[in-house]
Amino acid sequence: MTARPASLGDMDPQSPAICTEGLVKRYGKTTALAGLDLAVPPGMVQGVLGPNGAGKTTLVRLLATLLRPDAGRAQVGGFDVARQPDKVRSLIALTGQFAAVDEDLTGRENLLLIARLLELSRTGARKRADELLERFGLAEVGGRLAKTYSGGMRRRLDLAMGLVGEPRVLFLDEPTTGLDPRSRADVWEMIRDLVATGTTVLLTTQDLDEADRLASRIAVIDRGRLVDSGTPAELKAKVGGQSLDVRPVEPGQLAKVGAIVAEVTGAGAPNERDGVISASLAPGVSGTEALAAVSHRLGQAGIDVTELGLRLASLDEVFLTLTGGER
Amino acid sequence: MSPIRTARHGLTLAWRSMTKLRHSPDQLLDVIMLPVVMVLVFVFLFGNAVAGSTHAYLQYVLPGIAVQALMFASLGIGLGLNTDLRNGIFDRFRSLPIARSAPLIGYILGDVAKFVLSLVLVFALGAIVGFRTHGSVPAILAACALIMVFAFAVSWVMALVGLLAKSPAAVTAFSFVLIMPLTFGSSVFVPTGRLPGWLQAWVKINPVTDVSNAARGLMLSLPPGRAPAVSLLWALGIVTVFAPLATWAYRRQQG
Image (cartoon, rainbow over all chains, first blue to last red):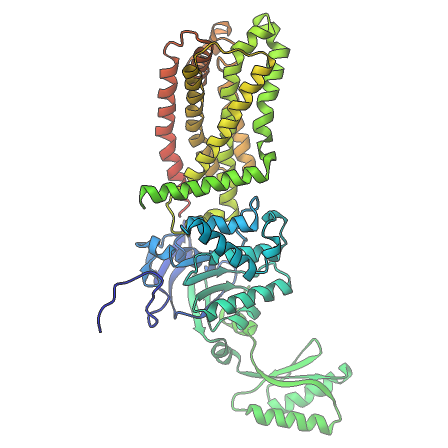
């Protein structure tokens, strides 16, 4: 093995893209991060979940070199955020909670500005701006001032500005907060495309559905500490086990369905929410057998259902359990 | 970061300021209206009372109005910095591999364009209503340069205000509190000797007095005395104190 000279944008695929050890940040008497350890492998979406004030934004600001840690270490792409901030900055991009676009410039000029600051040539900058406008569905409005944009367009422009420099690591701090469902789906699609090209994404969110859909790994943080981490499935299995859901065609039959489910799962009184009966399976009960039994009993009782299935506990349940139920 | 790269980043951000002005020329409304109003009000309303004739007063007051106009124009940097801080654009700049000071440089360069516009406007308007300079071309250019250097120095004070203020409204309020006594409590509108004694004490130490006396002297070919040198010293002093303070406030945002 010969040692290669380190070069930017050429990270070791084995070493973590983001790594923190005992990271501490205090604001006066408030401790925002109280010794956080996190390692994110390259080329995936790492979700960071936590209630308000858990330290999510502080973590992102530290990793993006906007803050200095009070103790501990943080590395991005192998570079220390406190000692080699310029190296880190050449690898990363940041998209914040509030779309940071210049409202008094057009969408295209916003992109040109970043491209020129990153020292692309004049023609290179134009090419890159047009490319990104096209890719983010902004080609038609590229010549309009950003202040005339809708919330969704603005967020897409924000994201596009983050991608001008083809970052290896992208920090997305609550990227879909305040967006309508359609725009949210668009942003999700773009994040998936990015990860497919090898970019590492650190996504903070309060939206559990978002974390579930996008993140391959999730870190749950609370009061500045890592509470738990794993794949969404691992977290769900750890906390809630499986649960069984039944939605009868006739809402009038909910009580009967509830009784059948309770008898089969042996898990006490099942929950009823929005016309769905759901019950956690008691430890040791086989999911397949419970499902077959419930199905059989419902058939015997002549109850028709629109939904019947097994699922892992939702991330909501995981979140509430891990963070002590306070949100 | 090499000085050449720093300059390049600063120029790109100055391009941003200029482009914004091109899109929203209404941002220049205050810069344009203030000198117009000042010339009309002071020359035609108070001219006779102060100097006995509007024509004579115009010759006296116009160079000082140019100084005042540029001081108000320097407010732009404070507002711009404050807005960028509040809406997250600053964070974006600071997460880019660019020179730390580039945004500050960008703003100050952008303001220079406003200064030039302001000067052209004041003297064009003055010429229309009857201002006649007696100075040589180099003297006139020197007067303009002196006013710009002083406004550049004031820019650093405004930058500091913009970095520390809680909101753009606070920037405006504080700047007015700063600019009003400096411009009205000076020799801009009334010769120092005609003011009451207690006010003279303030007017004599006010740098705006020196700058407007210097500009007036150069434009009207009067003996300027020590005023130009004193003005330059003031500008140097203000930059020496406020540029590091503004840079400190700027870096402090780093947390």
